Image (cartoon, rainbow, N blue to C red; front, side):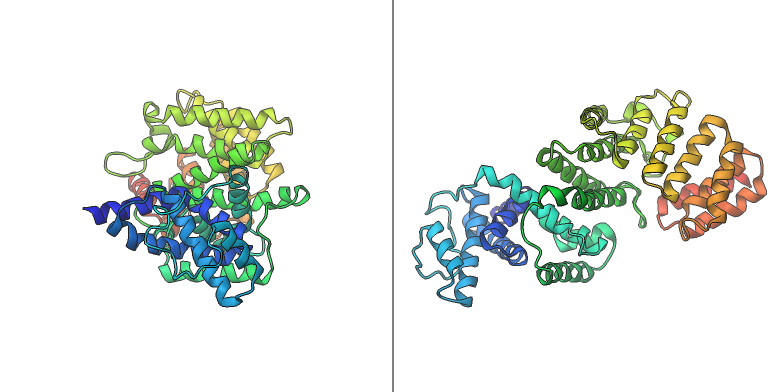
Length: 428
């Protein structure tokens, strides 16, 4: 029992404190890749020590002390006269005494390692900017952010994205090497660079949430743990960057979208489309949080960005008592604004859906036909499924069947594919 309790404590503390620990170690060592390795070594030590000796008085301090002692060992191996080692040793009050790695109870016999409250937020923010640096591929940014900021293990990340653990580990390793080769400093970017770099950070959080809220493959429609981690990251960002309207816009979008999760699946786990959802099951607390975040974004006075506009659309759904009572004309107008600000085939496809609700399927079909003629969204089931639905409403069952059959072939998510197959059966 004690062993299990110790392991559970390690997991809980790591999930909460990992970003602060890695960030502090990166600041002390000046080496992001080394800091992440040191934190992982400290975690491994805790998994052995805590089940055996009990949870220390200051769990986060224990992990930080263990990581810093490992850093001293690493610097000693590099050079006995390394100035960074001397500075770290003085900071720990060791005076250069020999260390055989982290002791079994580095916190019980020493004062708590002090957190610098003026630097913690900067450390976590710097960690997010480094993990989402533009020199990294999109996949690497996601994996590294979930690992060092979210505190997820390689196994957890692999399960979330349905890829082998070895693939995730390779991405993280390559990412750290790339950051080292590019000599990316561990720092919050200066103001002149921050706006451009912030987009990369927000995009990673959005990608994580999107995969969690509408899984691209597998047997689950929603991966709650992945979506929840994205929400947590967005909340952290909103506290660290309270003057950035698009940060609040993203948080609003995530909260308002997640508010519908309880009603998106039925008792059998099958998807429930928006028009059939029991709105009494929507999470009203999440809606209030989302609307408050959207209001903060609007108060900045710089106009809503792409995430803020999507949140405004989500708010239209959140406040409507039914599908029929939704302000679809406003939804169309906001989609048009979004299409000008951040044009994409997905935005146009969603606008077509809104147009069909506001003005009828005949007005929406030309938009979808234009996307199809342009070869938009190749390999995605979204376009043929929307086109099939519009054709059904127009009474063109034969053409609708062809589109839905194509959508079924392209859909990788099992619950969504089941919905499309039911529509096909209903056409029968």
